[in-house]
Amino acid sequence: MRIDAYEDPGTPDRRGGWRYLVWLVRRQWPRCLAGAVLASAWMVLLAATPYLMARAVDHGLVPGDLGALAGWTGAMVAVGAVNAWLGMLRHRTMTKVRMDANFRTVKVVVGQATRLGAALRGQVGTGEVVTIGVGDVQTISTTLTAVGPGIGAIVAYAAVGGLMLSVSTGLALVVLLGVPVLGVLLGPLMGRLQGREAEYRERQSVLTARIGDLAGGLRVLNGLGGKGLVADAFRRDSARLRAQGYRVGAVTSWIQALGVGLPMLFLALVTWLGARQAAQGHISVGELVSVYGYVVALGWPVALLIEMGHQLSRGVVAARRVVAFLRLEPAPDDGTRDAPAEPSVLHDPASGVRIAPGRLTALVTSRPSDATDVLDRLARYAPSDATWGDVPLTDIPLPQIRARILVADAEADLFAGTLSDVMGVPEAGLGGADGVDVRHRRAGATSRDTPADSDAVAETETDAYTYADAYTYADADADTERPPGADGLAKLTAALHAAAAEDVVRALPEGLDTRVAAQARDLSGGQRQRIRLARALLADPEVLLAAEPTSALDAHTEATVADRLKRARQGRTTVLAATSPLLLARADVVHHLVDGKVAASGTHRVLLDTEPGYRALVARDDEGTEEGEATR
Image (cartoon, helix red, strand yellow):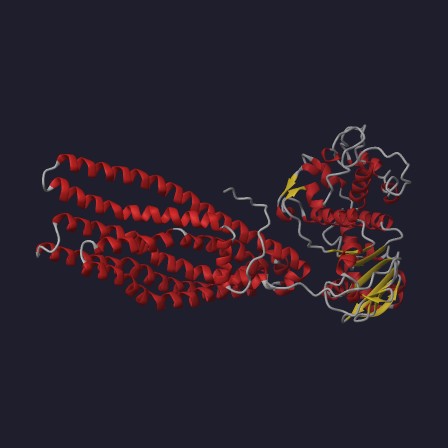
C-alpha cells in the first residue's frame, strides 16, 4: 500500500491522546493489521525453533535415527529462512506505518496552523509549534510500533505458554503469570514517567520559544543593552529543563533496568524449575532443551512488551499536546453584511484614526506597537469596534475583508523557494510575447532586450512602467488584443519598480528563478524589505496597511521608494506606520498618536510647524537621514 504524502489526512479525533493514537491506527488499519499478523507470525516462529529442536533430540539424536534427525533439522532451517523473510516484511510494513503516522500528523498540524491563520500567534507560542513539529510527531510515529511487534509479543507470549503446557503445567503457569507480575511492578513507574514527561515537554516548549525570541531580536537586544538579562533568563530556564530531564532520565533508567533485569530473573527461574523437573525424570532431555529454548524465545516478547509500555507512555503525552493544538479555534466569523461596494472611510474608534479612501495616510507614534495595533484593528486581526463606511468590521465576512484589505508586516514570513514563489507570482501570465518566461529575465529587460547591465539602463527602462501602465491591458476592453504574458509582466515589473527592487532581482544569478532560503536569510535586510513591499504591491489590494516598510533602507533608496510608492498607490487607500520624514512628507494626511490616541492630524509640514511633540519625534529620524545623505 503506497503512502501518499499529499492525500487528505482525514478528520482527527480530538477527544484525547489515546483516541488520537487509535485514529492514526484506524486511518491505515489494513497496513496495521498486516504488520500485526507479520509480527505475530515472526515471533511465533521464533518460539517454534525450540519445539523443533526438542523433536530432533528426542526422535533423532537420542534413539540414533539419522533420518528423523535430518528431517527435523531441515524443518528448523526452513522455519529460519521463512522467519527471515517474514522479519523483512514486518520491518518494511512497520516502517510504512510509522511514516504514515508521521506524515498524517504533520498534515493535520500544518492544516490546523493554516486554519488558525492570524489567530495562531495569539493562542500558542512559536516554541510549542516547533516542539510539536520536531519532537512530538516523531514520538507519536514511533509509538505505533506497538501495533505490530507489540501485538506480536502478546501472541507469541500466549503461544509459548501453550507450548509449555505440553511440557509441564507448572512451568506453563509460571510463564503465564510472570509477565502480569512484571506489569504490576512496572505500572507505577509508567504512570510516573507520563507525569515527568509532560512537565519536561512543557518546559521544552517554553525554552524553544525563548530561543526563537532571542535569535530574532538579538540585534535589538544588543542595541538596548538587554542581551545579558535575556541570556541570564535563558540559562535559568535551560538549567530547569536540564534538571527536569534528569528526573525523566531517572524514571526511564529504572524502567529500562527493570525491563532487562526482571525478565532475566524470571527466565532464570523458569530454567531452574525445568532443570529440576528433568533431573527428577518428569520431563525428557529434549523437553528440557525446549524449555530452555522457550525461555530464550520469551526474551523478545517480554522486552518488547516493556518497551511498548514505555513508548505508549511517551506517545500519549505527545498526542495530548497535538490534540491540544488541534482543539484551538480561530476567531469567530459571524459577519453577514457585505463590505461597502465603493471605497469608504475606515475608522478606528479606539484611537480616533480615520482613514479617508484613496489617500496616503501615515501614523506616527513614539511606540511602534501603538501604530501596529491600529493596523491590526483596521484589518480585523484584533477585536475592535472599527467600521468600514457605516458597517462594523465584525459584521463583514472575513473573506471579504482579507480580499480587499492587506497588512504588509515588516517581518512578514518569506518561505524558502524561488523568488517568484516567495513573491507570489502566479504561474499563468509570465510567458512573454516572445515565448520566454519572464522569470528568467532580469528586471528592466523587455522581450526584445538583453538583460540590463547597469543601474542607468535599468532605471531608464523601468521608468517606462508606471503603476497605471501595468494595468493597461488588464483594464482594456475584452476585444482588445493583448500579447501573451502582458498582464503578468506589466504587474510584476511595476511592483518591483515601485519597491525599488529591480536591482535585487538583477543581482541574483537566475533572476526570479533563484532559490532563496527561509526568511530570505541569504538576502540583506534592505533587500528582504523591498521584496516584501513588492509582494504587497503585486497583490494590488484596495486598502494597503504597511508597518515600517522602509525602516531597513538607506536614505537614498528610501526616498526613491517613497516617491514611487505614492505614484503606485495613487487613488488607492494606503496607510503607513512610520516615523521617516521621507515617507511622512509624501503623505496626504499624518496622524500623530500619543498613548495610542490621535493627538493631532494634518500634513507633515503643518504638524512640524504646530506640534512640538511631533517635531521632536520626527527630528530624530530627520537627523539620521541627513547624516546618511551626507556620508552617502
